[in-house]
Image: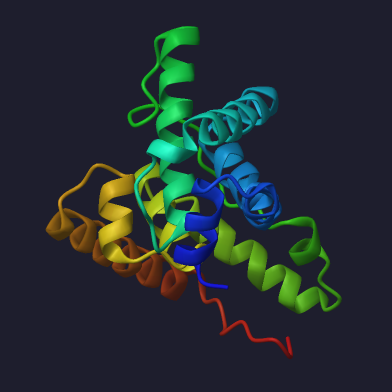
Amino acid sequence: MSDLILWKNFKGGDPNAFASIYHAYVHDLYHYGSRLTPDKKLVEDAIQDLFIELWKKRSGLGDTNSIKFYLLKCLRRKLVKMISFVDSVELRDDYHFEFVDSAEEVIVADQSREDRLKQLYDCLSFLTKRQREAVYLKYYHDLSMEEISVMMSLSLKGTYNLLSKSIVALRKRIAQSGIRRINKAG
């Protein structure tokens, strides 16, 4: 079922569509939120509030052909408000954004592959927080450049520039560290 149809069913009050959306995206939301703030409880509360608000306001919501993008954007906005309210820190200037693999991805059988991954993450740590977030949204969540620009409150040109500079900096750092290509075989 396409996102557009699933979303329309949800907006029409179908509890099964709502449950499908929740189960399909709750883990992605949690992982993304956890990268924006280290406060896991705050992330859980924000996700819960998000889904409660969605259900209550479903009939007035607009259409979307990318539920994942819509939810990630809503969660980011909600966390910015919650963090600003709690400690007057704006998310966009001072937030915690780290690359951490999910539990399934952490298990690496080959020690040399594990070492190369560590080197890669070390290289990623040299990027700015905004660069890491843009790379994460593009390559971990496969969002379009337009979606990333909206998520991060950047112009489309600014988004292209940010990702381009991120990739150039990452390539340079990788070349300096001598990381060999990481592939599935190890």
